[in-house]
Figure (cartoon, rainbow, N blue to C red):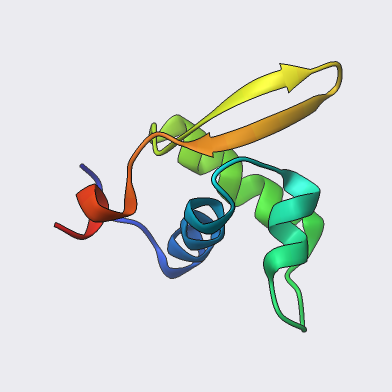
Length: 75
């Protein structure tokens, strides 16, 4: 399992907390100052490629969910 960058870990932390979320929900979970929408979108795309998160598509929107549990990542 590849390690995560700090930005990737932050997204995963929010996704572990939310369990299932759309990109907007993940962005809303950040405290101010929030990162740019495109930044979070890019990090999510990388996490999908690394197989840390999966998604379901609803029209033009994706709902993301973790494929790796928090316990499994930190062990």
